[in-house]
Structures are given as C-alpha cells and as structure tokens.
Length: 279
Ligand SMILES: [Zn+2]
Image (cartoon, rainbow, N blue to C red; front, side, top):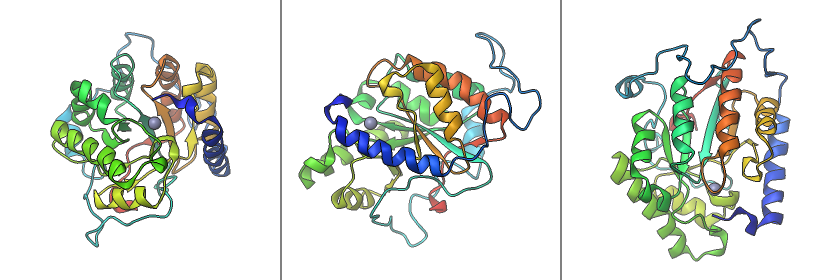
C-alpha cells in the first residue's frame, strides 16, 4: 500500500474531492465556537467518558443506522457511473471513514476514541490486512461500525483485468463475511480510481460505491493540527471524511480524531454511518 506510486493521479483526484468538499463548506464548525457556548475540552487521557459507551448489543438494537437492507428496494444494487461523494443530508449528519486497515498499531486507538464518544464510523478494510488481524475486524463489527471492502491488496484497479478486479473484491468480501457474518455493503476503490468494470462488479457483489467529500490527506503526515483543521474546515451536513488507519505512520490520525471528534459533537454534528436505503 504505497500511496506514493501515483502522485499525479492522486493529486488530481484529491483536488476534485477537496473542491467538492469546499463547495459544501458552511461556517458550521469552528473548534470551540460551536452551538454550545462552553464546549467541553477534549477529555484528558484516562478521564472517564462523558457518556457510558454502548455495549455491542445496544448498537445492534439501534434501528435507524447500520448495514440496513443489503439491497435497494428494487432488489438490485445500481451500477453507478460515479461513486457517491457524500451522504444525503439528514440534519447535521457526517460520516467518518478510515481506510487501508486494520493495523494493530493504530486501529485500536481509533476504535477506543469512537467508543468513548459512542460514535460509529466506516472502516474500508483491505482483505490482506483483515486476514492478519481478524480480531480487529470483529471488534469493528461488534462495536457497530460498518466494515467496507477496499480490495485485497490495494491495487490500482483501473490497470487490472476484470478477473483480477473481481478476485480483489470478492476475496475481501469473503473474509469480511467469514469474520463478521455479513458481506460488505459498501465498496471504496483504492486511490479513488473507478471505472465501469469496478462499478459493475461492485454492484454484482451487492456493494454501493462510496468515495468521500473531504480528504484529510493524513497519509502525507501533515501534522495533527492540520488534520484537525481540514476536518473542521470541511465539516458540513452530508460530508464524508476520509482518513487512514494503516499504510504508514498514522499516529497523527489517531491524535487528530481525539481533538476533532469532540469538536464536531459540540458543534451539533451527528456522526453516523450511512444507510443503504438513503441512496
Ligand atoms: Zn486506500
């Protein structure tokens, strides 16, 4: 998962995603100046969570979010021409997503922070990482997060033959099902590189295609504060935030989440996972 192989293409794709994000930016979130006059500071290490974390069974009892029906009402997943870039606005709802994991150095910390604030997120896992860290994938599902498919080895799919694309996607869905008991309902192409074969195969495997609205560019290790600012600047209803919990040193990603997550909540955002029937 070396992301530097494709700097030009990646930059172009990112520029598109960022500009889309910028278009949706509202003056909705400034750390410390949210709707509440006195937002709580981030909890100190070891502090008790403000709210009791939900038990896994409680997450599963929540009816309005989660995997939802695996198919559209028409019984088929549509073959898209471009991926979804955001989720339909449903109040001040945003989605946090973490790609390329799981990685035992970073994913547990991210899961801990999400649990502390009772927030659910999407994890687009790579099959080879999932196979090596099944406990972490199981924990994601147990704690109510959505486990999405991000291919087996993180290749540039647009350079592969159809059979190889299918193998990359299908093997990953297989192992997620083996670990979690459900096949992924969401797919995200590595590097944001999609083509018709990818959309068609994803639909055949029952997966919706989700890209992102705001890229934190955390994989460039820009500094924790910069990651926090990018999320804060991009925050708006319907926004999908992209970060990474593997593929390099993600300690900045881990630390940034601890700051921007309580900030978003104090600003009135509801961090959740999308429902398939939304789209
Ligand atoms: Zn990726």
